[in-house]
Image: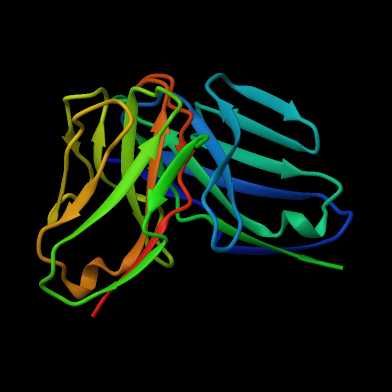
Length: 109
Length: 113
């Protein structure tokens, strides 16, 4: 079967760095997505990793280790608008997305 | 329209009533999806369609049906609503099944009493 784990909630300070972890178990793997979801809104795409390593996109970076079943999303220079839920999702062997429950990130001034 | 739209935005429905949630995209995406999102749970796939004319069951299909008569539209029907179907429903699309960066509609908040 498939299983995805991410922390339920994290708190960080404006201007700081935060790392949100995602661990997974799956019988088939075709890539891992990170999405951002502000309260009351739809999820929006942040990043996609299919190979091991770090993908950097501005203030956001995402890392994947397929052998360890592990990914993280790194957010730098945190801004108040980064307060949101961050969803980890893996693509299974049928190319369907399996979603984690999400990590609610609270940014404090 | 640009992107993916859903209607209605919200709805309160009596148990036992039939309801269709509408979803339309103008990106000519082949694949479309219906999810429900409940507090504390991840997005759960209800039904999907990899191309017009085909549909498939997701993780939680019971009580729901879909059709895909053309590329743009993917309606979700609750034949006889029950309170456990109270949720936020998101429609999404991706270019293909394999190129599956998914774009989401704004959601429909459904309450079944």
